[in-house]
Image (cartoon, rainbow, N blue to C red; front, side, top):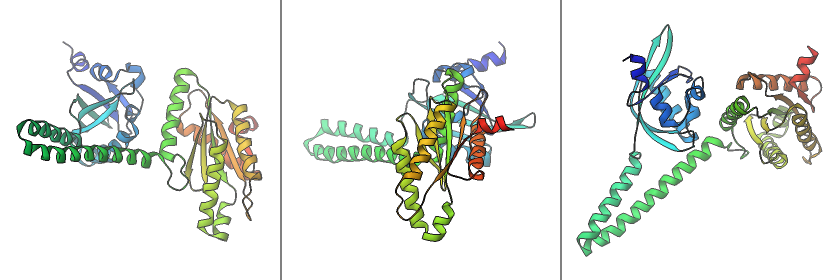
Length: 330
């Protein structure tokens, strides 16, 4: 039997990714485990098959360890299937070069055991059931262990909730953060490629923000940022995503919006900021807009919107520019 066919139907999953995490090869066993067709995963980032929490874990432990040691053994985490179900797996990986390029090859075994923390809880529960059958004296211990079991469950839920919040929220403004925005931008691009779902990207920057910080201090600057964040969120549609990109920059993913509708929404943001009561301050924003195009990447959309933002700044600030208009004027 051909070795390639043997690998494709091996009793464990196999995936080969580039050093940047893009899937280069995947066997049928792993495709069956995750519920995907081969063309749906090839070229995608390996983290696109993970929840936010598992992406954070994978990014924090897998990449640094395999780049330092060249291999990872018995790493336990979860993939997310095409039906959004968590699939616990055990992963072995090795980093090696082929044709002068580094690749990371991973063997994946589906696991039915829970993480060690949850295993301790199950062991505690088993002890409780055994002690319950033995003596009345053991019943007192049973109640104590049952309280420990419940407490551990609550602690685990709390830890997972805190990780999810920290991973997706900007602590100052309460908006979604840059990590969440970039994940959503990738998802919207995938939907655009597969279902031709239009969307646009806005980058918004507070005009002369450095002057506010220098004149009134950073506490006032922070108050301006949080107030603008609330204003933008109040104007956004339910399906849109508003996030803090960094510093005084905010971004928005405007769903189901072509050039015209995106410009209208951006103008409503700009007008609202200019008309808002900022006390003794005068606050305006400049906005750059790009709309998804065939063959677009995350970087391409951001670059076009950033160039349009620069054009808004250069032409007087407090205005909206679409990248398509810049292309027409070239």
